Length: 308
Ligand code: NDP
Ligand code: OXD
Image 1 (cartoon, rainbow, N blue to C red):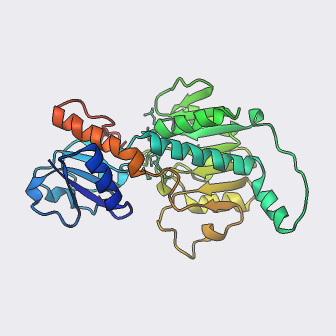
Image 2: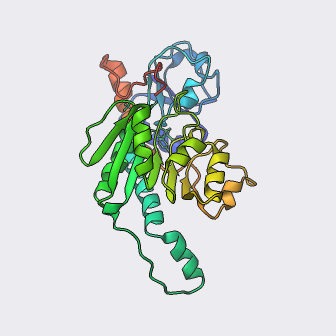
């Protein structure tokens, strides 16, 4: 079997090593060096160029290196073959760590302590116990649920909004528009871990921010398209929101002159909240390829009609 690897932001050599370990006998080619395209049955991709997958006449499976698949689904020429997405412990644990770190940073007043340290000032400030702080999640799937479970070990009050109701110990579940309206006013933190779809695009806008309590903090680790950046800046500047931690942006890389870079209430990271480490995630690619080969159901199949 021949596999085509296509990603501008992952190390093809690291993936080649891991693919060889988990899928001995499978030949890995790296785009654009495709060789005879008729050989290629599996494409392993992150942000493939539009039209590229349609050039592979015998393609049987697309494996997304990302958990979010909207960069693939937006290609109008996308071949009608199964698409599986990345769900892997290594990625999930990375994301849960990012979310916990950002919540702790703001809750434990690290922004203020950084400023005090710069002035060599010893000044103790009060923070509320975690059990009195509510963290709400937009999206309670693989990453939202795991992040909530991680915060639960620190005793935060937890809530989550998803399309279908969930039963996760210690997490109050909300769904539908009424559920969102009921959850938002209770959230000291709002963490977005939704997929980017027609239904979720622009969900974090002025009306959503207005529904949060004054002093709330927003964490966006999903996609830049979920956030209306101008509305966030207005909500920060008016003092309604206390801060924001942003890992993803409408335009990536975030342009050097973008106001979010230098905003004193914004923490910026360059789309690194959850990384698909080859040493931890190649096994998931191998599982999908083996399932295809054996004619077994494919794990983590994307429902194209839902968009995730
Ligand atoms: P999942 O598909 O497992 O979870 C998505 C969650 O969102 C589900 O709970 C789903 O509800 C909910 N949801 C989807 N649409 C709606 C809607 N219209 N209304 C309410 N809830 C909705 O995805 P993951 O947790 O694996 O990943 C989430 C996203 O995180 C990815 O799509 C990607 O964009 C982003 N991501 C970012 C990374 C980074 O480094 N910044 C790394 C990895 C992922 P239900 O369960 O009912 O279907
Ligand atoms: C992903 C991502 O979707 O890295 O996995 O953003």
